[in-house]
Length: 135
Image (cartoon, rainbow, N blue to C red; front, top):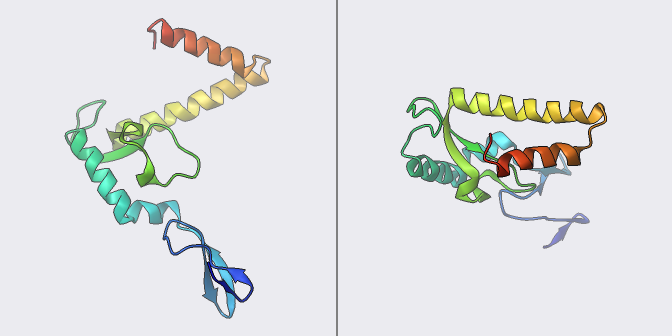
């Protein structure tokens, strides 16, 4: 890494923050999430997941408006860096429902916590249901 104008150039990798000249100054540029979804690496990864899932929604079997859903997010990982088992094909409707329920569960667990129920107890309750085969 070579220092220019007293600032270290961070990386040539498009996924990493980098310093770019602008009107005689340098500014830090990072790819937006939208930019990352247009990246060739995500396009290839997305296609491989769609192929793996037979180009149909894993919930309702629809073949319309397919999207690739991240079941969970890894801090600092780019969309194409996830293992395949973190990704699933969903139609737009099922994807919206999945995101709705994920948000609702978070809000509900927060409201329980505010009522004095520790997150540890909430987690143990959910874990017990999972172990007993209930969903």
